[in-house]
Amino acid sequence: MGNYSKSKHDYFIIRKKYTKRELYMVKVEFLGPIARAPIEVEAKSLEELSSVLKQDESLLSWLPKCAVALNDEMVMSLDTPLKDGDKITILPPVCGG
Amino acid sequence: MELYCGPLDVKSIFAKWLDEEKESNYGAYIPFVGTIRAENEIEALSFDIYEPILQAWFDAWQERASSLGAKVKMAHAVGDVPVHTSSYISAVFSPKRRVALELIEAFVEDFKANAPIWKYDIIQGKRVYADDRSTPMNGAGILS
Image (tube, rainbow over all chains, first blue to last red; front, side):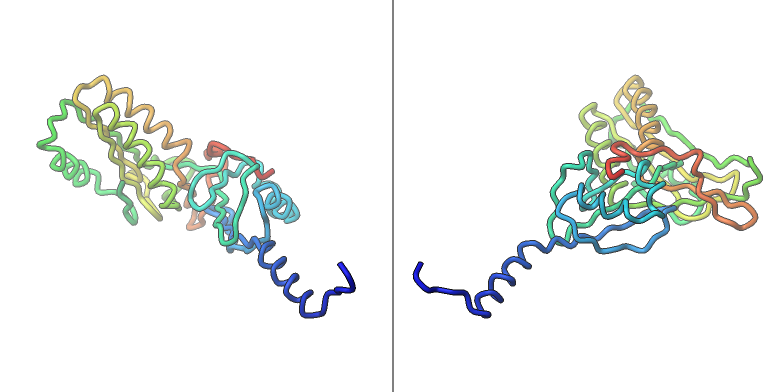
């Protein structure tokens, strides 16, 4: 109330908090025959990660047949939240033995 | 769960497993041997493995075997494995034969479908992904 207005300093603090809360960098590793170096992506959920990866044409033929692990545990749902520092592993079709 | 660089020494691994369970009082021991066949002009097969998820997959099977009073074992090769040598062996030990006979089938079939291992043909020195023989794992396609 009154004549309070935000200084440049206040904006800096607000921006800093906002940036910290919104940073969700995850590492994505591609296994076996996909033969790609790992990448870092900003994504808050697997759904967001899916949108990012689908922009890469070289991955489009792999994604429908690849399984996904989050921090080395298999994931069955796209509705999976991610946190900063998570490791996502993309696993193409397998054939052991 | 054991991983080896190159072809498996089948006889010595089976002998080791027998020795390990010598005093365990299992009545049945059923081994399975996977051998690389000479076909389609391949010189060898080659394998990539992602060990953290393979270990978790194996541990889940060990738990299932344990609930039946049984034990599973497996060994797999990493890298190149020439024809007529072995890339994969497994075994089930159980008190009686029926559990072991059923488990070895389920264990080997799920291994083919869900163990994180990638196979390549080696033809004239080139490493070619065995795309047509590979199976998408459970949950495949969620990102598409």
